[in-house]
Length: 160
Image (tube, rainbow, N blue to C red; front, side, top):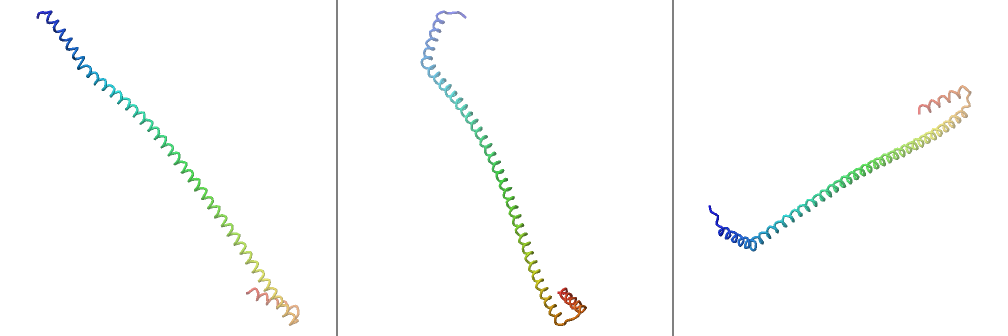
């Protein structure tokens, strides 16, 4: 192969013209498209980073909301437990009060019935005493007869 300087010179000039034309008509739009693509990719990266940051913030907020809900649920359960315990104590106290009231009413009724029975017994004893005294006065008996008469009346009273 031979070296021909004129061919080299023509090749350099052709290359220069080709470079000038490519630079003027092809490289500008090509670099412009490449620059737009670069900006688009950078915007997508920024958008993805922002979305990731928003997602992390949302996740943090959701975890906090879940923790708050758990705390609130625990407080509600504790309040319900305290309320039920309080209500149970109130019911027991009212039942005790009612039992004490019923016991006192029963004691009072028993005492009243006892007093009525004692009064009735006293009335019967006094009536019997009057009856015995009148019988004794009627008969005017001796001591032995009086004793027999009293014993017979006491036996009658005991049978009743």
